[in-house]
Image (cartoon, rainbow, N blue to C red; front, side, top):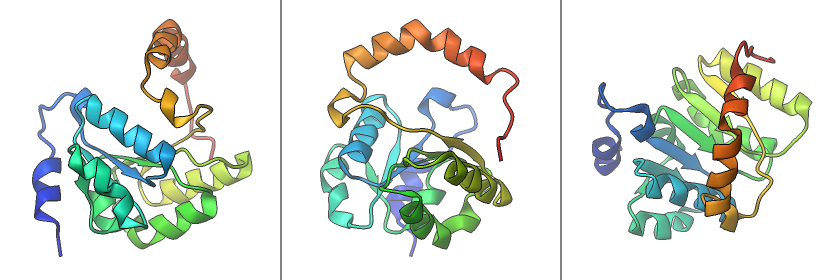
Length: 170
């Protein structure tokens, strides 16, 4: 059954600026919850999902939309951020909804080895989605804090330079 609230809050409007597009956060441990809070604070419509549904309670109280299933979570947004324990958990969670990844961007913040990242990049590409692999080297309290913004502003141009001519490593 489709979650009506989720559909209403996450419909894309063609003229909506990219900075306000919906985002989905999958995995609501300390770091995933911090990421979801940062997206909400920035004004993004944010859908959340966790295997233990109660972990979404606090986020739902501050405006996040609780997805009833992984399929609803993936379908809710063009940008899907995964922050779970390991690659095995990521596959276990996403496989049932993998046919819904097409046309989306999957950002995987699961730590692992480069070989695992390449394998996931190929898996995601086979499903018609784009992939970005990353790791977070911070504690949840640092997410969207004042020091993070200052550092990002200092290096933003250099990071953009890194993406020029980028190619899929898969």
